[in-house]
Image (cartoon, rainbow, N blue to C red; front, top):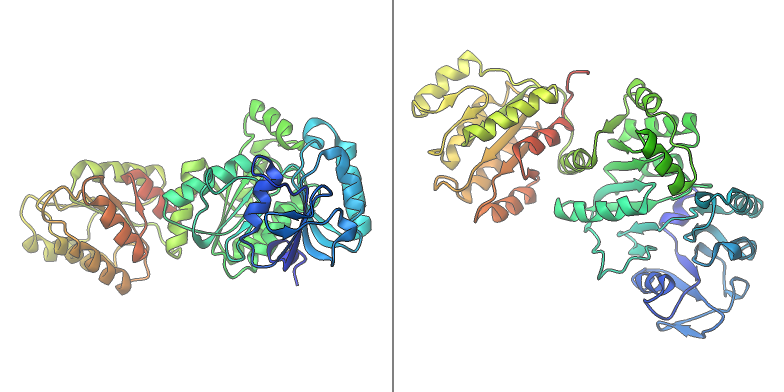
Length: 448
């Protein structure tokens, strides 16, 4: 069994620093833990009960050993609290800050030494911990009223920043996709991104992993585990600390040196580990992979009822090194008699504002063997596009394993069509360019 099972799927939890009110972080975490399926033991010497649970004065007086313990007490107290966990916990999340990130490296080294002596794994310090919707496990000191959680899904988030993790929560909800796990590992004195990759590689509830990284402590270990994970499921890495100022900020954040970005980037390329440029590309790619499976090839068909939108998509395909090849002659002979003369039978294939639902499907079925992926753009302000469009695209999707993404321009029925399309597994994006970037994550573009 992976040693991190006690972190992600504990049966029992103690909270050291539990509070009676949500005005304190210990109170917010305790309230969030009330949703947890297993046992919860609040620890606070000033109370006999907290939020309806029996409270304990110290770790030593817990009625049993626990799988996971959470510490949210001042940093100066943490070493002694950790020592009290002898034979009391398998894994500890240290949420408290005040360690290497402010120059207190000796204090951080001390808690690592204690943990090794006691055979306890540590997540943190200086972190907000984990969120596992499958176990209703939530150690974040962020209330549900202030930060809504994404629905249960197949994306795992591994973040060195709690702020980025919370931003990803909002982006994931907006993208109509869901989480399998979310982990903020902070200073990573013990458990780091590499350990988490190894765990997620064999986690059946996770289909794609997105990872925000500022620095890496052990380069060889990182590459080995990232390769292991990438061979089993998509891993998308967003690296910060690329500039000189960003590297200084990264050190102040977690007390770890960011290192030279050029070296990091080169190593990722060498081992074919996927890196994204920015936050938007991370989300566009994650959404596509969450909905559909990657496929070989790089030839893209752009199908639209708006010429300008098709041009934007074509431009983005060029930037992403995807191929937008003309329609084959054999297909042109078949399609020309079927469409009005003013349709642009090229790639992008512009059906114009006269397009009807069935026109899209006629073109897609005729061309599905000639391309590797499809961008379907629909400006639904025209009368020819109806809800029947969804059923027809569903039929096409069933007929081919090749990826298909969509852009639906904003108007009165766009939200309804978007929800229906995503219900049948076709991701919808707010612009032609972002639709192309999503498709890129599912294809094999030309090397840079």
